[in-house]
Amino acid sequence: MREADGIRGATHGSAPVPLSVLDLVTVGAGQTASDALRTSVDLARLAEARGFHRHWVAEHHSMPGVASSSPAVILAHLAAHTERIRLGSGGVMLPNHAPLVIAEQFGTLEAMAPGRIDLGLGRAPGTDGATAAALRRAERLNEGADDFPQQLAELIRFLDDDFPDGHPYRRIHAVPGPVQATSPGGVQSPHRPPVWLLGSSGFSARLAGVLGLPFAFAHHFSAQNTIPALDLYRESFSPSAVLDEPYALIGVSALASEDGEEARRQVLAAALNMVRLRTGRPGLVPTPEEAEAHPFSPMERDFVDSWNANVVHGTPDEVRAGLDDLQKRTGADELMLTANAHGGDVRLRSYALIADAYGLPTTGSPTTGSPTA
Image (tube, rainbow, N blue to C red; front, side, top):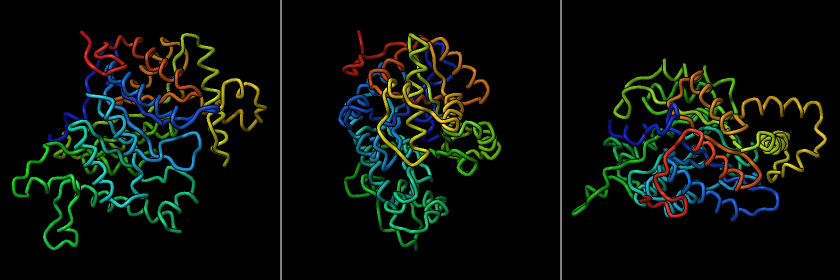
């Protein structure tokens, strides 16, 4: 199992499965991208100190309230401020990029933080159609999505440096990478970033199963498809050199506050942000006060109610119970929590409260990331 140790996490406290973090680097009204990135560093340190298994950053574009357009850049920054926690993309939208470029970026990250890097890949654009066309320099947006299996195979070949003889890319190498070990005097790291497939429907679930790769499902915005997709992944799974049995995590929106009513105020603001995004008006995450004063139309109110029904929120005990129930219903091997709120302090406090609710140990200082005495 070349990569299994990096995939499977440890369970701490009373948590039913390993807990991880999905970071959208959200920017609230009155804040800057610099503020959001400082929060991401604080969050990675907190997650490391409290025993969360991994911290992933998602690729999005042309969204004022999401400052994560360049996951590899952010991950390099987080790697410089942490020591143990796994860092990765949740995910890189592969059709937006040349596979060689991603192999080079994540080979570089692996060299910076050996044994700590995950490469999560998706086939959606991570944005609207016009922005996707600008990213891909193509008018037909389905070109990249349709070619995803071929792009994935090419990327893995670059990561492993094992194109067959006669292939046009046989003499092309992703550096840093395995080719360095074959050069005179070369010594190469034994690690290679594990590849994960991300999805919100059945396509990537089936592909991950067939290839024997770990799978991450976006429950936080496609809850109705969660169980069917996980069932399809498990039914399609074939043991591989990476995994001998399926391993699936789900992304979950979760927000805890000492005051349950305050948690509801915060998730209302995040829901208003989604209303604006879904109606072509993306912006900064509004404040709870703005959300409370917003004149929701009946259609908007229906959307908010439907959206927040899949956000696990409330007091720490309520959130813990909700997460436990979700894990039991889905059989997820790992829960990756994303806290969407206006303020970075609210997000940080939510993760700390959830860690407390599960009795996660304090394994290091959230300020320095160094072990405690």
